[in-house]
View 1: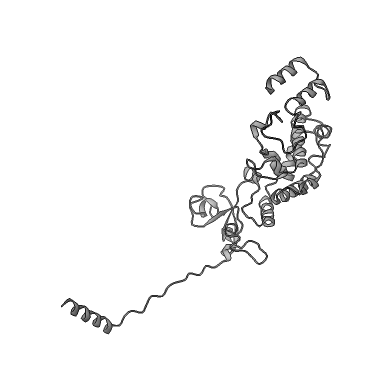
View 2: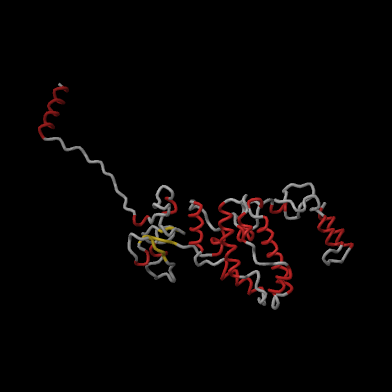
Length: 305
């Protein structure tokens, strides 16, 4: 019923200015009974929005990247409402200004559209789970320092995307930031979802790149088929054709998997390369003497007779 109503509104009016009957009618269709509700109802009699039955209650990837949560699993009520609104405003204005001010005046367009620097206090809402709060606070701080959403001198949308690429969502140090949040949560299964989508995976091995055997070190990727001392030539199958045990995204060479069974005094990860495993051997009983063997043979012979 929503689509015919929208068609009727559009066909009868061409006034798209703010506050016009057209836009007011569009806002009323599907949202009047639930305007301002948080989280958006999934199965409302009066639809909250057209996308509610497409995405359900799940937060889009781009909002998870800014506000926290796991794409495909986190519902709207598990993130900050204000952060969600800020992120959606940024994404909506990005599309508008990319069309209107693609080559000039992009930063001014974003400001006029309503994009501002984030207020990081929205990451501290009481109902938020710890993983969302910690990630949101860290990412919001990077947004503020980068000034991607508040720099009116940006000329093109390429400048904005490049700002996000080089200052906010940087691959350099992303694994360390992930481990920092995981340590705060005491859960080293935690991952930053966008890192896997954007960044090359890192591998680590004991004694990699000529370092000491009892130290976990990064293993570089081979640049050509004849390189030595790199992933393809050193790591075990199925990663490579070598003999070394290599670990994805674990600079402790198995320490993430062993936590919390093995941890340091301050509840940190243990470098498993420096852990010596002791093998317990069961000693065999002493061999029987020759006399005892002869006595056993005589006893057996008597029993047979």
